[in-house]
Image 1 (cartoon, rainbow over the protein chains, first blue to last red):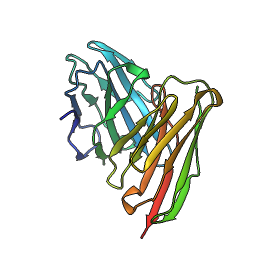
Image 2 (image 1 turned 90 degrees about the horizontal axis):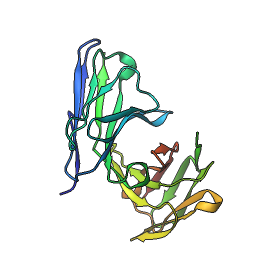
Image 3 (image 1 turned 180 degrees about the vertical axis):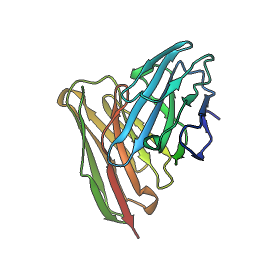
Image 4 (image 1 turned 45 degrees about the vertical axis):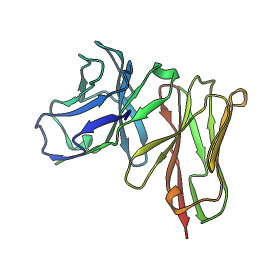
Length: 113
Length: 104
């Protein structure tokens, strides 16, 4: 089954404790991206990757890092989480970058205390 | 950057009613998708529709790229249609959504 898988789905952590949210897709897509969703602000792009070893900032990259060492994986790293990073995070992948259909993971709800 | 506006912001329907959701965008786009976010937060692809018309069961969508809008039609609505409907363009700039509540 074609899917985008995120882990963990739910996480409560404390300020400053590094964490990684993993994202994996089994569709051989070149394009992957991360979004955060906040009430009243909608979904905003954090980082995206057009292919292996190619990453770029989205609209709200501050406080986040990503890596794309393999085509299928695109982890989101919070080196020193802060409460303003409490949000619902989505990973997405697609075959044609900006111009193709994107598929989303189920979301990861992160709370930073 | 491109602005994406959706209307109405909220919609309350009784089961069986039909509805039309609108998405306006401020510039030409190469990609337009409609999503349904269910009450559990999952984003579900409805349509990839940069132009033209598509239908999938009770749902259909039309994008008129030259006039910079897209419409999502929901016919014979059901309670399971409740949630938030988003349109998104290009590198996925999202609109603010239409919150739909369908009551039995």
